[in-house]
Length: 372
Image (cartoon, rainbow, N blue to C red; front, side):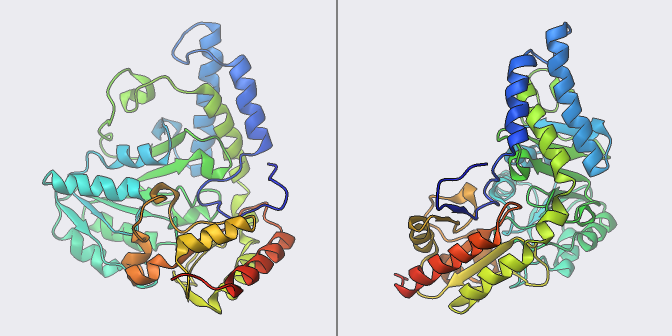
């Protein structure tokens, strides 16, 4: 995917540049598979084939039955669908807004919700999970992101899964930042799982909820019988065609991302001279760093780097534009440090010479001082 001259894109956790093969697959499907997948004639069958090919590909990647894959408009809708019917919910302030807001709505409606304690390193306190579940009804849900969207911290999901199952609860895993980037064993024990295509170089506007075992989730939308009636609405065959290509590409993703750790560490070292790392350094995805830089507000440093052609962020893209500091970093180390936090997320096409350019840009920007 082409970038503007001089631009270095290091905001892959917000969205990944689509693969050329993805855009080609989407264009081809718009030409050849534009029918309604529910139609029984040949035009509809071509569209249906694109939908089911993507479903089969995702099921194979995740090691699940294709019937367990429910297509949605993205990760946010998939999290909402997976949690909407929870009779009780345990989660933390580390989660993506699409989980935190559902928890807040359930709590406001009188459902039992437990806010789990977290460590300064951004990990769930496993003993705290066990303690919280003692006060929730059986068949409650524990909702955890496999890889945190802001810090890259990998949660101890095997331990959390044991806590959940011992209490008769389900484990819901937001794997949006994990699939195609870390070893699938990290999230393999999830009872339900969320994926978003655009995080793995697919198109925006499509994701999936994988739901295994137990009764089906409660639909957020009502309408037709598409997606087993759990997510009504005409499926987008073109988006599915692009998603399928991204899914196949994601098979080799963990090895490609593992090679980024050295480049990530080069950037982080330059930032740590003037700041503090946010997130346990021993339990992170290899492509993400989050640092609070002394003397700078996070959003002001993002703007300063943007003027240098370096694209980074100061928090979740879904929370961008708010005046509040990152709720994730706040939950870990407090609001003051959260205001100074910057997230840098590399991607599989990031080159060492681009890191050299970023280091030079950082030196210029940081030497000019900040406003915090």
